[in-house]
Image (cartoon, rainbow, N blue to C red; front, side, top):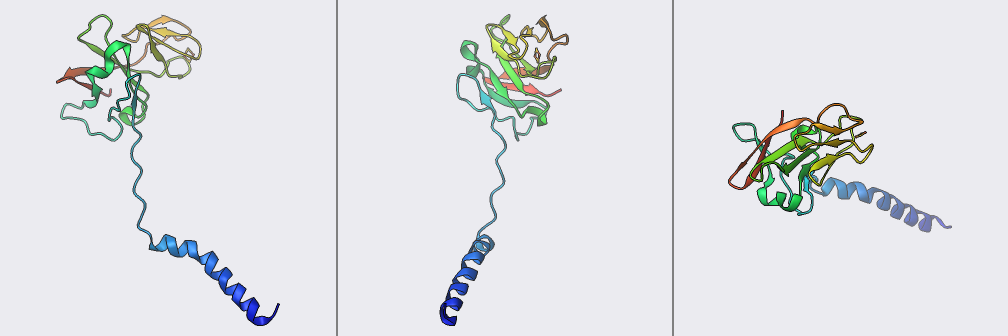
Length: 160
Ligand code: FES
């Protein structure tokens, strides 16, 4: 390879290797990541607990009452700064009421699921009532209960 051809190839190589740095330096800063959106089972709504601000009483809006129709549940994995997965369901004992619990199983920490009026753990089959009490082991401790209320068709939950 002659000198001229070598210098030509070397110049292309330097340009090619420095191009990504030039592009990165000239581009605008990347936007900050959005907080994780929580999800609601069976209805596709997205309560806004992750990153949302509480109201003056410390309650977070996590969804709408209609999201709880037909046995569906509102869930949020980032509720209250990651202290556990929130699950909100219609109170089976009171159709006008709701219950909100930490869905983290007290046995080994799996996330319980709302099925036919009870919270069932998929890992070792523990069952909890809608108020969090243990109905069937191996779990021995109840699920943690959050304060919850309905206002104007919206579901509000207060982390404890
Ligand atoms: Fe739930 Fe074991 S982790 S029953």
